[in-house]
Length: 292
Ligand code: AMP
Image (tube, rainbow, N blue to C red; front, side, top):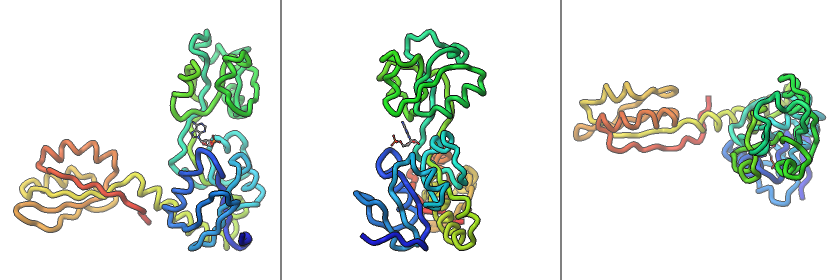
């Protein structure tokens, strides 16, 4: 195996877990070329001076704070829990989840103040304690390293505080949500000295432009449609061209081709109106990057 090049930027990501696949996909979409992580401790990018290190996600804050690596991709939840001295650079729009306090379905606990004097099991003791303090609730926190959802059934706790991306884990364990502690998603963090270093910032800015390009493109679609000429003005007005003017090209047999870039959410809002105005087909194309 080749050695790590210490002149390169270093980025730590989760070796194996919920964020792994989407992190790799995100890095590849950013135009970075590297071998798949399988069984590897690190990869060297072929087309950018970057080393990717595969580690346990709990270790990422320490690696970044200590300068072992310059950058890390991890859940905001870990940052909120551990509060390391690092700089948060970007929200990455994947790995969405929520830290919830939940109780057994039949529990008498129905609001936050009912948690006073009760026991809450969690892998996020600091986040949970801060939330309780803010809400003036005094409860006992039991720190558990996994399978928190079974602790009420075992009689270990009256409530749990755990991460969820869907409600299915709660339902499976006969639990119901009581309150949200916070929302989380994958984020990019950096070592504070790395962002203060001129040399590293040149590389980092290049990387950030790539990452931001992928993030902006995610919400937008390129659309093409054939519009009847007599309705052209009306149809153009329906297209809220946010970042790219609507182009009208090629007129044939009373139809003009329109192309534009719009937010996908907006597209679903105006599809009905476009159809009513005589558009029979809308071609929706993904955008790889928007570089600005
Ligand atoms: P894991 O692979 O279970 O260690 O989870 C890694 C990260 O994925 C967590 O720190 C969260 O940021 C995120 N995540 C997304 N959905 C969930 C979920 N349902 N449960 C736990 N973590 C989640």
